[in-house]
Amino acid sequence: MELISYEEVHSNHSFKIKKDNLNDDMIKDISCFNKNTSVTEIREFLERKYKVELSYSLVYFHFRKIFPMFGPDDASTFIKFCEDNEFDVEKCIDESDKSITKLFICSKLMKAHYKAYGDSLIVDATYRVNKYKLPVVIFSGYTHKGRNCIFGIGIVNDEKESTYNWLFAKFFASHTSLPIFLVSDHDLSIKATLEKSYKTKHIYFAFGTLSRVSQSISTFYMQ
Image: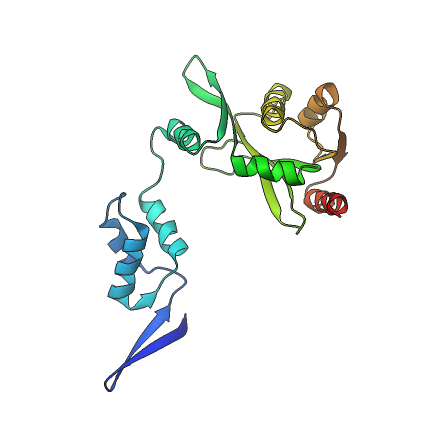
């Protein structure tokens, strides 16, 4: 904690402390609200009660742990959110149980980023680190300032060649042009998909060096 300000009232001093975490009493107070309460309103209540300064993101984090944004219908809720915000949404549904096996989303901002910085494209997947244990495939690149930007996101139930065929088809349908360079790890499904269907320079790198190489390529072409 750090002292950030004080106010003098007559002969008394009131100190305002900036906190980087919430104590148990604060978290208990948050649970007394409901999921429709404004996070700003909750933050202001806690600051008045405990005479501290709290960041919005800190309060939001604990608020969402108590009141998750999604519930039993997570997939449909998420898709509706994307559609309401004018994302491109493509999905593949398993007719046996109506579950979503493949999902691709792309926003207007992602399209603008690709149009400006899509000379090089990084494709990489997180490996089942979310609570649904599903691979999340990130299509990304770098701006002329060296900052990461997202071109598209896929959520799938496997990393087979047929899945990457589907994902790349949806990605390039949204963006309509190929990159000069595509950078990925040595995933055989990605390699097979690109060799069969897309004429672009494919560069393979081990995990950890992948992003640095793509950034160097992108910087070269932005000069």
